[in-house]
Length: 150
Length: 328
Image 1 (cartoon, rainbow over the protein chains, first blue to last red):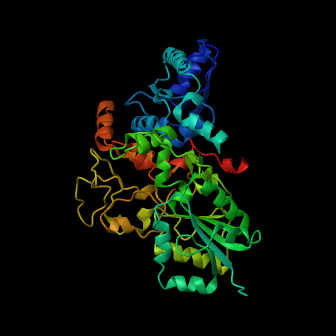
Image 2 (cartoon, one colour):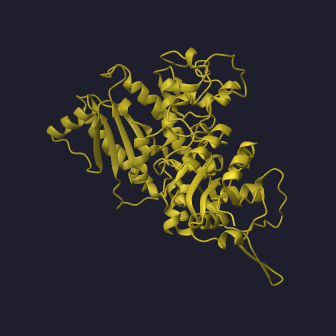
Image 3 (tube, each protein chain N blue to C red):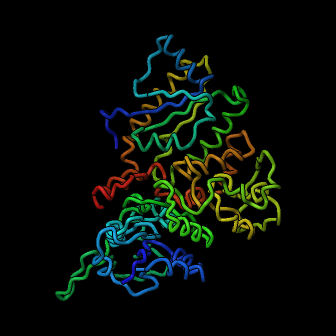
């Protein structure tokens, strides 16, 4: 369902050493990107518990963007590989739950890649705008109908 | 007449295994009967809903309710029992976390109805008849319960005091819980009774064979491979959920050479069992390559949701609506 007035709420969970610094860089370099993104900083993308992501979706996030260091660059050696594995499995599970798995995105963005961050956020906002609000997804429809029917 | 405390047992959407667990108490059940008077137990004794309605509010000391809430009859009954009971206990995985019936939450009501009344291989239903809650034929009105859009764990429908985990709860867990209840020394509301607060690995006889670090290139399916005896199932490549599951069952499945599937539910402090199990399983994968990771997941898990949320999909953070039905 396309709705051009729809402004998605996006949550970014960024690692302290790379992607968060890229966001900082984008900020100080005055690169603008849509204001739909709220950022949470974690010490490592490997710290991101799948529970955080489900919680975010349940509480109204239309999309979640995970940002970590490039493969091989993790401050904690292999935290981002763990992120990658969890991300792949979580995507499968989200799909089966009835949530469009495009609402979850993982990007490797280093501290110097302010421009990449800007591009990714722009792209992601566009993509989620096309998908529409998360309440359109099957899992949430079920929640809504049961509130009425019960 | 009788001064004994009254107890009630009821089942909702469940397989009957929990009732069986009570019967399994064998001679221990005599102690229960000695200490308490059973006022309602539809599966074993002839009581009617009227008998419960005639009781005063709060007259039942404890109601043990198993099964998840799937239709309107179950909702009415558990609300009635809640009103008449001082303590309500969610008995077994289905009542506690939604259980196996809860996996239906990954399908819509329509898909379920279509399968059972139309598409199923053995279904013959040319007139495409469906269950109708209010059905009238020849001036006779029949009422059947309404099938809900989704499955609820018990505490998503009524207030629940304690939880007894397990699919089904083991004899010792049931016995310990009953002892706790009659001891008068009640734990704080919301506690899990009769089980351990440590992970299953802690009591697993194979724990000594588990190394510090486990990484796996492939996962084996239990239906296609025979595990070696006396060796941690996880290092053999079977997805044993012991590390993220509450202990208390004395590793019954593992002792029978079958990996833990997580029926005792989450450890304290974990809100979403499936998410935690997913996180744990994914981090075992021994690969840093995107395609290879995908390949391992796809080959091993035709249905990952069914593995990590086998007993707890309705309690996933996504579907969590505390006491929503209660509020109307």
